[in-house]
Length: 206
Image 1 (cartoon, rainbow, N blue to C red):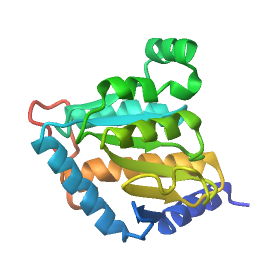
Image 2: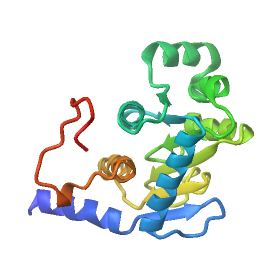
Image 3: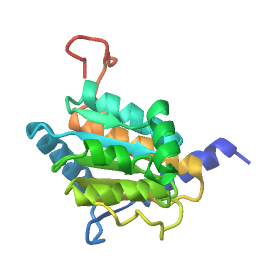
């Protein structure tokens, strides 16, 4: 058995069968969905609004990473609440299920964007964060996977569902999709360049 080939084939299959829907549950073509994401990002930037990323475990790491990259490289103010002091305090005082909804209630505003990342799509703290975002009239983008009936699959204005059965493939796919979004916004094209990207440059060699 060629484990690497089977794994990479499964990953490619998950991306090929990616399901993207709008707030009504209607399907959206993959390229069109990323066009919408980039239009949303441009609007967010022009209106001086912000992006807020939430996730648990590996998804929390992605949230931290993308909040940094969107702020530093994409030029859009972005936050992640995956800070140990913040999360432990909120979990202790308010309960784990409010870990993200409470800080979101403090920092989220009309016109901001919530990016909710959950491999299972069933994490109560992510579900509660989406509910708070709705009350604040924020735009919501969800990334989920595993069971097709997961609770956040249709909860956002744009929803990316990865039809894979294991966390590793779903998590890798989510990270891939998040980078596609940012790189497309920044017009970064791996396939049509000869030089190597240098993000330490003052003007960024994108």
